[in-house]
Length: 98
Image (tube, rainbow, N blue to C red):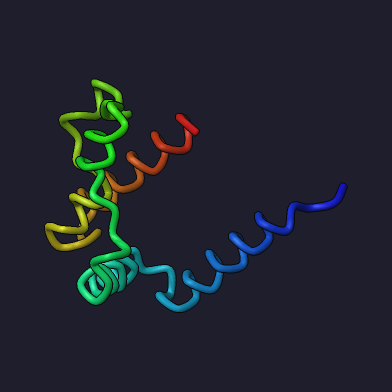
């Protein structure tokens, strides 16, 4: 079976980024925040997208009270067992939905 060249490139880039941050989610979010400040024109405002598209949030009702991985990172990264558990739970939930 021939693999998809687009997927190969996505996986290659993911692996490269993972090596650069040493698998550290906190470093990944630091890097993303820095890129956001340096290039605000590349950042998508999800509220504006929803307003334009008319689409509602895709988060399940049961998840609305749980913090997203981004919210966790904004309050200090994935430090401590509680934060790591929240990140892992949200990643699992996303994987189940996708």
